[in-house]
Image (cartoon, rainbow, N blue to C red; front, side):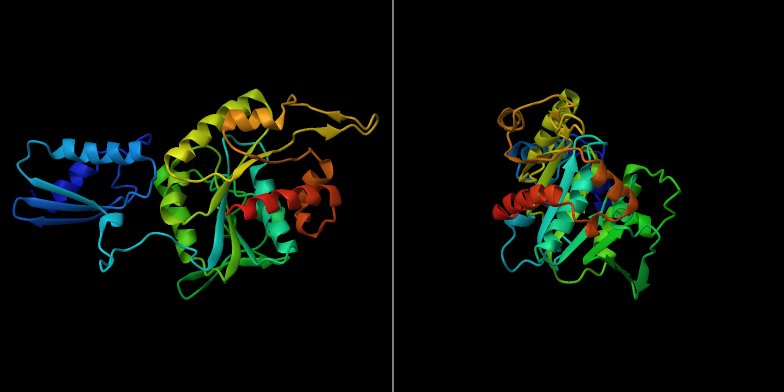
Length: 337
Protein backbone atom coordinates (compact mmCIF):
# COMPACT_ATOMS: atom_id res chain seq x y z
CA UNK A 1 0.00 0.00 0.00
CA UNK A 2 1.13 3.53 -0.73
CA UNK A 3 1.14 6.36 1.80
CA UNK A 4 -1.73 7.98 -0.08
CA UNK A 5 -3.82 4.79 0.20
CA UNK A 6 -3.04 4.49 3.91
CA UNK A 7 -3.94 8.12 4.55
CA UNK A 8 -7.14 7.67 2.56
CA UNK A 9 -8.12 4.72 4.78
CA UNK A 10 -7.32 6.72 7.91
CA UNK A 11 -9.42 9.64 6.67
CA UNK A 12 -12.50 7.39 6.90
CA UNK A 13 -11.99 6.81 10.65
CA UNK A 14 -14.02 9.31 12.62
CA UNK A 15 -12.91 10.80 15.90
CA UNK A 16 -15.37 9.37 18.49
CA UNK A 17 -18.37 11.66 18.78
CA UNK A 18 -17.50 13.76 15.72
CA UNK A 19 -18.23 13.76 12.01
CA UNK A 20 -14.60 14.63 11.28
CA UNK A 21 -11.85 12.10 10.85
CA UNK A 22 -8.66 11.58 12.80
CA UNK A 23 -6.82 12.98 9.77
CA UNK A 24 -8.92 16.15 9.84
CA UNK A 25 -7.98 16.63 13.49
CA UNK A 26 -4.28 16.10 12.70
CA UNK A 27 -3.99 13.12 15.01
CA UNK A 28 -1.97 11.33 12.33
CA UNK A 29 1.51 12.87 12.63
CA UNK A 30 3.47 10.69 10.21
CA UNK A 31 3.34 7.50 8.13
CA UNK A 32 6.49 5.46 7.45
CA UNK A 33 6.46 2.49 5.07
CA UNK A 34 9.24 -0.12 5.12
CA UNK A 35 8.30 -3.09 2.97
CA UNK A 36 5.27 -4.77 4.57
CA UNK A 37 5.70 -2.80 7.80
CA UNK A 38 3.77 0.44 8.21
CA UNK A 39 4.54 2.71 11.15
CA UNK A 40 1.91 5.31 12.03
CA UNK A 41 2.73 8.01 14.58
CA UNK A 42 -0.30 9.45 16.37
CA UNK A 43 -0.80 12.48 18.58
CA UNK A 44 -3.51 11.29 20.99
CA UNK A 45 -3.84 14.26 23.33
CA UNK A 46 -6.98 13.04 25.09
CA UNK A 47 -6.66 11.55 28.56
CA UNK A 48 -9.83 9.54 28.05
CA UNK A 49 -8.67 5.93 27.73
CA UNK A 50 -11.93 4.83 26.09
CA UNK A 51 -11.44 7.37 23.29
CA UNK A 52 -7.77 6.43 22.86
CA UNK A 53 -8.53 2.71 22.73
CA UNK A 54 -11.43 3.25 20.33
CA UNK A 55 -9.19 5.14 17.88
CA UNK A 56 -6.43 2.53 18.07
CA UNK A 57 -8.89 -0.32 17.57
CA UNK A 58 -10.56 1.44 14.62
CA UNK A 59 -7.18 1.88 12.94
CA UNK A 60 -6.33 -1.80 13.43
CA UNK A 61 -9.74 -2.81 12.04
CA UNK A 62 -9.25 -0.62 8.97
CA UNK A 63 -6.11 -2.53 7.97
CA UNK A 64 -7.07 -6.00 9.17
CA UNK A 65 -6.60 -8.50 6.33
CA UNK A 66 -4.56 -6.06 4.23
CA UNK A 67 -1.36 -8.05 4.62
CA UNK A 68 0.61 -5.18 6.15
CA UNK A 69 2.32 -5.32 9.54
CA UNK A 70 0.94 -2.33 11.43
CA UNK A 71 2.98 -0.55 14.13
CA UNK A 72 1.13 2.17 16.04
CA UNK A 73 2.98 4.60 18.30
CA UNK A 74 1.98 7.89 19.89
CA UNK A 75 3.89 11.09 20.55
CA UNK A 76 4.04 10.12 24.21
CA UNK A 77 5.66 6.77 23.29
CA UNK A 78 8.58 8.42 21.50
CA UNK A 79 12.03 8.48 23.14
CA UNK A 80 13.23 11.81 24.53
CA UNK A 81 15.58 12.28 21.58
CA UNK A 82 12.77 12.04 19.03
CA UNK A 83 11.93 15.30 17.29
CA UNK A 84 8.18 15.33 16.80
CA UNK A 85 6.35 18.54 15.95
CA UNK A 86 4.38 19.45 19.04
CA UNK A 87 1.01 21.18 19.07
CA UNK A 88 0.11 24.28 21.03
CA UNK A 89 0.39 27.97 20.46
CA UNK A 90 0.40 30.99 22.79
CA UNK A 91 3.43 29.71 24.66
CA UNK A 92 4.06 33.29 25.80
CA UNK A 93 1.25 32.91 28.37
CA UNK A 94 1.99 31.41 31.76
CA UNK A 95 -1.58 30.15 32.22
CA UNK A 96 -4.33 29.49 29.68
CA UNK A 97 -8.01 29.28 30.66
CA UNK A 98 -10.99 28.46 28.40
CA UNK A 99 -14.48 29.80 29.10
CA UNK A 100 -17.30 27.66 27.73
CA UNK A 101 -21.03 27.09 27.90
CA UNK A 102 -23.47 24.40 26.85
CA UNK A 103 -25.71 26.83 24.98
CA UNK A 104 -25.82 30.42 23.84
CA UNK A 105 -27.46 33.23 25.77
CA UNK A 106 -26.10 32.39 29.22
CA UNK A 107 -23.59 35.26 29.37
CA UNK A 108 -20.45 33.27 28.57
CA UNK A 109 -18.64 36.11 26.79
CA UNK A 110 -19.57 38.56 29.54
CA UNK A 111 -17.95 36.24 32.07
CA UNK A 112 -14.87 35.73 29.87
CA UNK A 113 -14.37 39.48 29.45
CA UNK A 114 -15.08 40.08 33.14
CA UNK A 115 -12.43 37.49 34.07
CA UNK A 116 -9.89 39.30 31.89
CA UNK A 117 -10.80 42.66 33.44
CA UNK A 118 -10.62 41.27 36.99
CA UNK A 119 -7.22 39.66 36.37
CA UNK A 120 -5.94 42.94 34.93
CA UNK A 121 -7.19 44.82 37.99
CA UNK A 122 -5.30 42.36 40.18
CA UNK A 123 -2.12 43.40 38.43
CA UNK A 124 -1.74 40.58 35.91
CA UNK A 125 -0.90 40.94 32.22
CA UNK A 126 -3.87 39.50 30.32
CA UNK A 127 -4.87 38.56 26.79
CA UNK A 128 -8.20 37.26 25.48
CA UNK A 129 -8.95 35.37 22.25
CA UNK A 130 -12.48 35.50 20.89
CA UNK A 131 -12.88 32.02 19.37
CA UNK A 132 -16.67 32.38 19.07
CA UNK A 133 -16.44 32.71 15.30
CA UNK A 134 -20.18 32.99 14.62
CA UNK A 135 -20.77 35.54 17.39
CA UNK A 136 -17.54 37.51 18.05
CA UNK A 137 -18.79 39.82 20.81
CA UNK A 138 -15.53 40.44 22.67
CA UNK A 139 -14.76 43.59 20.62
CA UNK A 140 -18.12 45.11 21.51
CA UNK A 141 -17.67 44.41 25.22
CA UNK A 142 -14.11 45.77 25.27
CA UNK A 143 -15.10 48.90 23.35
CA UNK A 144 -12.89 47.94 20.40
CA UNK A 145 -15.62 47.21 17.86
CA UNK A 146 -14.26 49.78 15.40
CA UNK A 147 -10.68 48.48 15.59
CA UNK A 148 -9.04 46.52 12.80
CA UNK A 149 -6.14 44.11 13.23
CA UNK A 150 -2.82 45.16 11.71
CA UNK A 151 -0.21 42.85 10.25
CA UNK A 152 3.53 43.07 10.81
CA UNK A 153 5.48 40.58 8.76
CA UNK A 154 3.26 37.51 8.87
CA UNK A 155 1.87 38.21 12.34
CA UNK A 156 -1.40 39.75 13.52
CA UNK A 157 -0.93 42.41 16.19
CA UNK A 158 -3.48 42.12 19.02
CA UNK A 159 -5.60 45.12 19.94
CA UNK A 160 -4.64 46.72 23.26
CA UNK A 161 -7.12 48.77 25.28
CA UNK A 162 -7.68 49.38 28.99
CA UNK A 163 -4.71 47.14 29.79
CA UNK A 164 -6.07 44.06 27.95
CA UNK A 165 -4.74 42.47 24.75
CA UNK A 166 -7.39 40.93 22.50
CA UNK A 167 -7.81 39.20 19.15
CA UNK A 168 -11.08 38.39 17.43
CA UNK A 169 -12.42 37.58 13.99
CA UNK A 170 -14.32 40.82 14.49
CA UNK A 171 -11.03 42.68 13.95
CA UNK A 172 -10.54 40.93 10.62
CA UNK A 173 -13.98 40.82 8.97
CA UNK A 174 -16.89 43.24 8.87
CA UNK A 175 -18.73 43.07 12.21
CA UNK A 176 -22.08 43.50 10.50
CA UNK A 177 -21.54 40.63 8.06
CA UNK A 178 -22.75 37.21 9.26
CA UNK A 179 -20.07 34.51 9.14
CA UNK A 180 -21.52 31.48 7.32
CA UNK A 181 -18.75 28.92 7.57
CA UNK A 182 -18.60 25.16 7.71
CA UNK A 183 -16.72 23.35 10.47
CA UNK A 184 -13.43 23.10 8.57
CA UNK A 185 -13.34 26.85 7.97
CA UNK A 186 -14.12 27.58 11.62
CA UNK A 187 -11.32 25.25 12.70
CA UNK A 188 -8.87 26.90 10.29
CA UNK A 189 -9.80 30.40 11.49
CA UNK A 190 -9.28 29.52 15.16
CA UNK A 191 -5.94 27.83 14.51
CA UNK A 192 -4.71 30.74 12.40
CA UNK A 193 -5.67 33.31 15.05
CA UNK A 194 -3.78 31.32 17.70
CA UNK A 195 -0.79 30.69 15.46
CA UNK A 196 -0.48 34.08 13.76
CA UNK A 197 -1.19 36.50 16.62
CA UNK A 198 1.94 38.10 18.09
CA UNK A 199 0.93 37.84 21.73
CA UNK A 200 3.29 39.48 24.24
CA UNK A 201 4.40 37.77 27.44
CA UNK A 202 1.19 37.20 29.42
CA UNK A 203 0.34 36.00 32.90
CA UNK A 204 -3.11 34.78 31.85
CA UNK A 205 -4.62 34.01 28.47
CA UNK A 206 -8.42 33.71 28.28
CA UNK A 207 -10.11 32.00 25.34
CA UNK A 208 -13.83 32.52 24.77
CA UNK A 209 -15.07 29.31 23.12
CA UNK A 210 -18.23 29.00 21.02
CA UNK A 211 -21.16 27.47 22.94
CA UNK A 212 -21.70 23.73 22.79
CA UNK A 213 -19.44 20.83 21.88
CA UNK A 214 -18.59 21.54 18.27
CA UNK A 215 -15.32 21.12 16.42
CA UNK A 216 -13.97 24.39 17.84
CA UNK A 217 -13.64 22.89 21.31
CA UNK A 218 -11.56 19.95 20.10
CA UNK A 219 -9.49 22.26 17.90
CA UNK A 220 -8.60 24.38 20.92
CA UNK A 221 -7.75 21.28 22.94
CA UNK A 222 -5.40 20.06 20.22
CA UNK A 223 -3.67 23.38 19.69
CA UNK A 224 -3.55 24.97 23.11
CA UNK A 225 -2.12 23.72 26.40
CA UNK A 226 -5.05 24.57 28.66
CA UNK A 227 -4.44 24.91 32.38
CA UNK A 228 -8.12 25.06 33.20
CA UNK A 229 -11.63 25.77 31.95
CA UNK A 230 -14.73 27.45 33.37
CA UNK A 231 -18.27 26.52 32.35
CA UNK A 232 -21.00 29.15 32.50
CA UNK A 233 -24.62 28.19 33.02
CA UNK A 234 -27.91 29.63 34.20
CA UNK A 235 -30.03 27.82 36.81
CA UNK A 236 -32.76 26.89 34.31
CA UNK A 237 -33.48 23.17 33.88
CA UNK A 238 -32.70 23.14 30.15
CA UNK A 239 -29.42 25.00 30.63
CA UNK A 240 -28.36 22.62 33.41
CA UNK A 241 -29.28 19.53 31.36
CA UNK A 242 -27.17 20.84 28.47
CA UNK A 243 -24.35 21.69 30.86
CA UNK A 244 -24.26 18.10 32.13
CA UNK A 245 -23.70 16.80 28.60
CA UNK A 246 -21.08 19.48 27.92
CA UNK A 247 -19.14 18.64 31.09
CA UNK A 248 -19.16 14.98 30.06
CA UNK A 249 -17.82 15.88 26.62
CA UNK A 250 -14.96 17.99 27.97
CA UNK A 251 -14.06 15.28 30.44
CA UNK A 252 -13.92 12.80 27.55
CA UNK A 253 -11.53 14.93 25.50
CA UNK A 254 -9.31 15.56 28.51
CA UNK A 255 -10.06 19.22 29.26
CA UNK A 256 -10.00 19.82 32.99
CA UNK A 257 -12.89 22.05 34.09
CA UNK A 258 -11.99 24.20 37.11
CA UNK A 259 -15.61 24.76 38.09
CA UNK A 260 -18.84 26.46 37.05
CA UNK A 261 -20.24 29.96 37.30
CA UNK A 262 -23.98 30.30 37.82
CA UNK A 263 -24.82 33.41 35.84
CA UNK A 264 -28.05 35.42 36.07
CA UNK A 265 -28.80 33.44 39.21
CA UNK A 266 -31.12 36.14 40.57
CA UNK A 267 -31.86 39.85 40.47
CA UNK A 268 -32.67 42.29 43.23
CA UNK A 269 -36.12 43.90 43.00
CA UNK A 270 -35.95 47.72 42.91
CA UNK A 271 -39.15 48.02 44.96
CA UNK A 272 -39.00 45.26 47.60
CA UNK A 273 -35.19 44.77 47.48
CA UNK A 274 -35.66 41.02 47.71
CA UNK A 275 -33.85 38.51 45.56
CA UNK A 276 -36.02 37.12 42.76
CA UNK A 277 -35.14 34.01 40.75
CA UNK A 278 -36.47 34.25 37.16
CA UNK A 279 -34.87 30.92 36.10
CA UNK A 280 -35.74 29.12 39.33
CA UNK A 281 -33.66 28.71 42.45
CA UNK A 282 -31.26 25.84 42.93
CA UNK A 283 -28.86 25.30 45.78
CA UNK A 284 -25.22 25.61 44.59
CA UNK A 285 -24.44 22.39 46.47
CA UNK A 286 -27.10 20.55 44.48
CA UNK A 287 -25.73 21.99 41.26
CA UNK A 288 -22.24 20.85 42.27
CA UNK A 289 -23.53 17.29 42.64
CA UNK A 290 -25.42 17.41 39.32
CA UNK A 291 -22.46 18.73 37.33
CA UNK A 292 -19.74 17.01 39.31
CA UNK A 293 -17.93 20.35 39.57
CA UNK A 294 -17.31 22.91 42.28
CA UNK A 295 -19.29 26.13 42.33
CA UNK A 296 -17.12 29.19 41.65
CA UNK A 297 -19.82 31.75 42.31
CA UNK A 298 -23.33 33.07 41.72
CA UNK A 299 -23.67 36.20 39.61
CA UNK A 300 -26.88 38.26 39.66
CA UNK A 301 -28.50 39.79 36.62
CA UNK A 302 -27.45 43.44 36.71
CA UNK A 303 -28.87 45.85 34.15
CA UNK A 304 -25.88 48.16 34.65
CA UNK A 305 -23.47 45.38 33.71
CA UNK A 306 -25.54 44.60 30.61
CA UNK A 307 -25.49 48.27 29.66
CA UNK A 308 -21.71 48.45 30.13
CA UNK A 309 -21.09 45.40 27.93
CA UNK A 310 -23.28 46.87 25.19
CA UNK A 311 -21.45 50.21 25.37
CA UNK A 312 -17.98 48.69 25.73
CA UNK A 313 -17.26 50.41 29.04
CA UNK A 314 -17.13 47.44 31.44
CA UNK A 315 -13.34 47.65 31.81
CA UNK A 316 -13.65 51.21 33.13
CA UNK A 317 -16.74 50.76 35.30
CA UNK A 318 -16.65 50.76 39.07
CA UNK A 319 -19.42 48.28 39.84
CA UNK A 320 -18.15 47.23 43.26
CA UNK A 321 -20.69 44.49 43.98
CA UNK A 322 -20.21 42.82 40.59
CA UNK A 323 -16.43 42.91 40.63
CA UNK A 324 -16.26 41.77 44.26
CA UNK A 325 -18.06 38.60 43.11
CA UNK A 326 -15.77 38.28 40.08
CA UNK A 327 -12.73 38.77 42.29
CA UNK A 328 -13.75 35.83 44.49
CA UNK A 329 -14.38 33.70 41.40
CA UNK A 330 -10.93 34.51 39.99
CA UNK A 331 -9.28 33.70 43.34
CA UNK A 332 -10.88 30.25 43.29
CA UNK A 333 -9.78 29.64 39.70
CA UNK A 334 -6.15 30.69 40.01
CA UNK A 335 -5.83 28.84 43.31
CA UNK A 336 -6.31 25.52 41.49
CA UNK A 337 -4.39 25.97 38.23
